[in-house]
Amino acid sequence: MNLIIATSNTNFAKQIKGKIKDEDCNVLEIVSCVEDLLTCISENPGKIDGILLKTDLAKKHDDYRLEVLSDVVLSIRQTPEFEKVIFTVLSDYPEGHPLLAEFLGMGIYNFFTRNGIEFTVNNLIDSFKKPMSFSMALKFGTVNKEIPWRRDLSKTQTLEVKFTNAKAEIENSGKLKDEIDIEDKIEASPETKKTSMDILPKTKIPIPNLNISLPKLKEKGGMNESISDEWIFEKNENSFKIKMPVVGTVVIGVASVEKHLGATNTAISIAKFLSKAGNSVALVEANKNMDFDRIHSLIEGEKIILSEKEFNYKGITHIKYRDDMDLGMVYTKYQFIVLDIGDIRNSSFKSEFARSHIKCVVASADEWKYHWIEEFLLNVESPEELILLVPSSDFKTTNDLESRLKKHTVYPLEKHSNPYEVPKESEEVFEQILRLYLKKHGFRIKGKHLLLTAVLGALISAICFIFFI
Picture 1 (cartoon, rainbow, N blue to C red):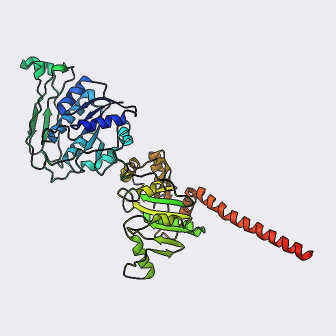
Picture 2: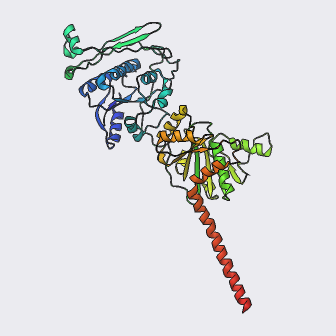
Picture 3: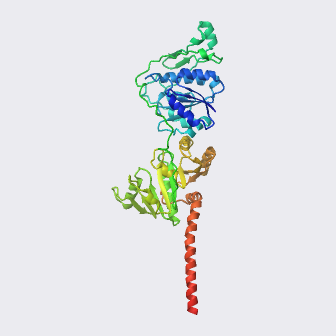
């Protein structure tokens, strides 16, 4: 796979090149300005598989020229020789920025933003091999109208790109080959705004003497805000760190791909299922929602929040979230620990989820929410270890979701209002996903019983022997 890295930060580009060199990726060239990008792609028609584009590419001094960058990328996308080239955008700007919305309109779906999908080597390579879906990138089409831009992207637009044969232009204008200009012609009307831009032609251009002058656009206030070039690959501060698994205790992590999907209800149901089977179970509130305080108050009939750090209910020890909670002490006391992590994207318990023996992920089978799962899977290590649970669904919807995911098994959970009363259908699901660990603990209990039976038998036999003698 042949890539071009396009950013004004050449040191950063060299770091990326060094990190991906062992991933069957060949960096054809590092370009530091839009002029060099145009030169590079014209020299390599048919050889480029992808372009890693950082939004600082058009930067000159303190002028970021984002609208120029958008026009250049649009022209490249509209040129037949490069229409199959995959763009991955490394954005210094968040969701809602008009530049990203324009890129989305060009059919670019690969975006890395700060606090978005983790910028890892694997995710970067995958963005070129398996581009992100439109549904996942759709959020970048929503524009923050407070950010100044040359046109209102909330209205219907027509973008028209004019490609001019450079050879003909040279012959007609009498210009030398090293004086080819790219001129920006922007025509605006109340209803339709068109952008016409002369760009490199389909015919080959003698590159050595190519001199390109880019248009000078009037930047509006707010476009020159200071941004940081300190983009680095994630070091797992906010990722799922792999620690040594907990020995002697089975840890079950229950997370969700988005808020309010039922992670807490699911965690309670799993804990109740285990408790009902005779196991010692702790249910840990591994999130800051403080739901366990409210549950405790409801159980006790109080109208105030109770200060105790834990309480027992339905055979389950509920451990409330506290800043000073020590999970190490909890892990030594119970056969099973169920972690109610909830929305995991910004959770401080990602590392605990990563070392859980069983990793349950609560999701929705609604087709329009599929991008939540897709983005989640890009941010987790070893996604093949995940067990997807879909509350309030049937087998048909879960089968449809499973067929889309291909490598993941999806389990439906019966709809029920009281998580402490587990429906039979959900019990069957829990028994299936926990069967290995249930057998292990079952054998442990049976072994103790067998040993006790053997001791008692031997004792009775001895007594009988002495008595009869």
